[in-house]
Length: 380
Image (cartoon, rainbow, N blue to C red):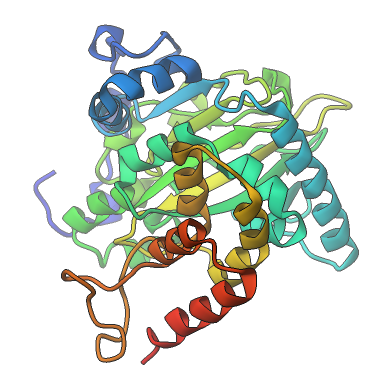
């Protein structure tokens, strides 16, 4: 497309269909264990082993898979510690019950009440059970996957989604950022910014239950992230029909991870079972250069988990993964009058403060004081 500012009348479903007819060449992804329906399949243990030998090679291959590749991959056994998954699932059920009693709920692309949804599950789990949070987010492979798309300093958010028996599929869509805007708004962004949008967010899902096809795992259209006008197209009936004709689904087992480019056309599927609740923890991870959809109160998260984290002797890679999920990793925005750079061009990050506290074994009271001071000096 040559236009800088696109309009709906420029949409061409035949061009979209041609993009989505590409065929995966698995030999271009040597770390993958296989592929299915144009989706790359990785094994967690193999990726971790490869990362110990050549981390940059792993980061590069996963990035290519999401950008110039099919836009989606599965990691089998992302969580080998299923006890951590089950413990979080129990917390999810308790939160869903409490929020339902309070009249909460709602979804972006499905009728309110047809699915179960927990917004900001990351913070809610941290505040309820610090050890459960640590055991869940100390996953070094999850950190590698996030870094492969977003670089360092990414910011984690999590939202639980349940598709209950009889639950209907979502409308096919693209995701945050521009996937959440009306076409009138999207048209105001030049095409290079529309393309940039997809590089600011990573979409992931951790299976908290086994997900046979009949339970409604995510419908996906590989390669669709490469159609540049997709943020204007996903509501168009012709594009919806194309998606419904060509979308695929893959069964997942508990502990598997699914990751995709947010520009990939996708939708939660129909749950046609009578008794199976499909539960996924949806990870929406943001670049340090972007804005998260959800506001996470990292102060509360850190105050909640620091005492438990202080008692742990985690390996460096697991500790780094927890810190990346719990604390902000970017120095900006800040108040440079009161928060000047230290030994370089950037002020201390929240992640660096947390790591310093753990290494120097600050008491929780002292950590909370330093965290409050760190937060206050960044305010204008």
